[in-house]
Length: 607
Image (cartoon, one colour):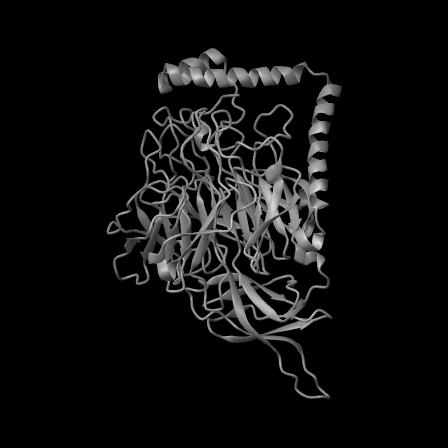
C-alpha cells in the first residue's frame, strides 16, 4: 500500500498495488530522493505490520480482533456506568455498516434521510454518494447508492471522465431544500497527474434534490476548491470561500469569494458571481462561517487571523471584508458552533478544541481542550476564553441538541509523522462524548462509542432527537492497522430520551413566514411548553456549515370553554427575520417542562 504524498493532509491512496521499485523510481522523480526515501520507510513499516498479521494463524487473528473489540466494549460499559442514562445518555445502536462510501460528508435531508459521501478506496479519482433511510433500519435495504454525475475533472487532461470526485468539498442547503455542493478533489497527488504532487481543488458544483434524489450539475466556479466553506445568506444566496484552487503543483490557496444564486425552480441551474472587490487577507481551509441577525457573515477561525465580518447584504453593492480581533489560539481541525441564543437570534460563536501551537521535537502536535467565544455584536471586545472540554480533541464534531445543550462526539489526538491528522489516542478515551450544560456552562464526559471517530468522521442530529456518528476510515479495530476499506456508524441517544414521555406533534404548518404566529397541535400526556427550530446539519472535517438552533416565542393555546376545551398545543411566533433564520427547511421540535423534545416536524421557512 502506497504511503501518500499527502499524509500531512490526512489522505491515503487506498489499495493501489505497484512494485516497490516502480513506486520508488516514480516518487524519486516527482518528489525527490529524500522525500521518496521517507515514503519507502513508511511502506516498509506497513509491510512489516502486514507480515506480522499474515504470520498469525487464523485463530490468532480472530483472537487479536476479539481482544480489540472486547477492550472497546469494556470502555463503553465502564463509561456508561458512571451515571444514569437520564444524565449522560447512551449509545443505543452498535456499529452498523455504511455501504458504498465513507461518511466524510453527511447532511440531513428534509425527507428524513441522510446523504453521505466520501472518497474511494484508492484511484481512480472518482466520487460516490449514498442515502440512508433510518425508517428502514440498519441493514442493506436501508441504503441506496446515488452517485453524482460523470464529469471530466481536468478537462481533456490525464484523468479520464468519471463520477464527480466531490469529497473534500463544501456543502449546505438552498432555500428550496436542495443540497449545494461546491468543489472537491481534482487529483490524487503525484498519481492522477504528475504535474500535481499535492492536493488541488475541483472547480465543479452540484445540487441534490432530496425528493427526486437526483443531482444537477451547476456552472463551474472561477477556480477549483479543496476544503472550502460555504454559508447560506439571509436572501437565499450562498457565499463560498477558501480551499486550494486547481493550479499546479497543488496546495495553491484560492483567494476568491464567490456567490451562488439559485435557479428559480427545483433542479434548475443557478449562477456564480466572482467578487474581486473583496481582498481576502489570507487563505482559508474549512473556515467557520455563520450568518448573523443583521445578515452579515461572521468568519470564526480556525486560525487566529481568520476572524472577520463579511457584508454581502445588498446584491447590488460591493461585498466588504472587515477584520476582527484575532482569536486566542490556533485551532486546525477544531469545531465551532453558533450558540443557541434568544428568539431574536444569536450573535455568539464558540470555537472548540483543534490543533494549535508549535510541533514537538518528534514532529507531533497535540490538540487543545480549550474553547473561546466571540460576540459579533460587540466584536471589538474580541475573543474570550470559555469552559474547556475535559479532553483535548481534534476533528471532533459538535452537535446542537433541541434542549439547547450540545454534544461533542469523537475526535482525534492531533497529528504526528506516522499517522498525520488521522492520529488517535491509544486508550480510546476520545470515544467518550462530552455534553455541554447551558445552565452551568460546563462540559461533562459521557459514554464511549465502540469505534474511534476522528479525522473524516461526521455527526449530525436526526429528526427523532438522536445523533448519528459515522466515518473515520482509520481506526484501531482494523486488524492490520491499515486504512479501513469499510465504514460504520453508531447512534447516540441524549439524556432527554431517558427522562419520561415525549410530547407529540399532531399537526404543524408545513410552511411559514418570518414573524408569523402559527399553531402547533399536540397530543398525549406529555404537555409541550416551548418550541425550537433546528436547521439540518451539513458537516465535514468537524465543520458544520448549516446547523443552527433558534428558540421560539411560545404560549399554550387558549381553551375555548369548559364544555369545549379545544385542542392542546402551542401558539408560536416564527423568527423575526432571515438573519436570525435564513430561508429553508427546519426541524420543529416542541419540548415539555423537563426539556424532553418531540420527534420533529419539517417546516419550510420563507417563500
